Image 1 (cartoon, one colour):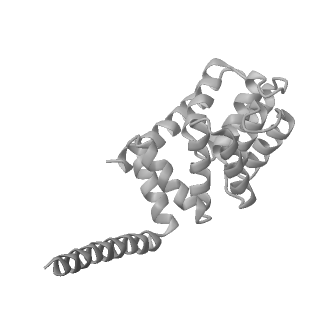
Image 2 (cartoon, one colour):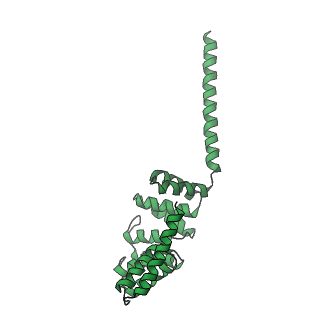
Image 3 (cartoon, helix red, strand yellow):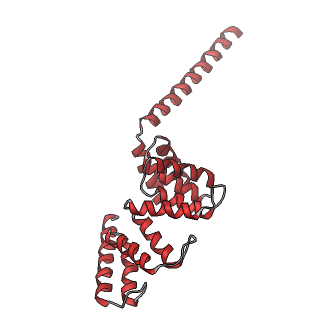
Length: 217
């Protein structure tokens, strides 16, 4: 009788062990079937609901699959979490893969001395400028602020600030349009007050804002 019970127990253990193995294997196969783009999409959905842990996990999976946008978002979240060394590592990988905006994040961290041996604002400015010249609108906006306020060890230069702000606005960047409207309204950055230009850029910014609201309905 005891031998039968032992045999029954062994069979039961084998059944559950096999079932667990099948379940783990199935989950692994399903995970592998999700594309990097889908991981990125899931990451964005989690990010928009402020689920930073879920977003970080999905962006990491997209990044490890060599998906450029995933690399950038993963680096951004690592930077926010102050995991500086790993953030720099992923910004560099994104930059090597020519991901737009990678130079912006890496350049800012280099100037702040985060995740690097020592601060290097000259290299930081070069990276941000390269990113802006490649057409990255947030980098243009950052350069406008840098040259307006004299940040990252550069001297204030209203003309350069206005140039980058205008490029960002012309590229369709809403916050740049809004700021440019204020520039022309109040006569900032070396320009004379121009109510007509101020109104033009305000209306352009309002149109972008309306389109964004409609897209999220």
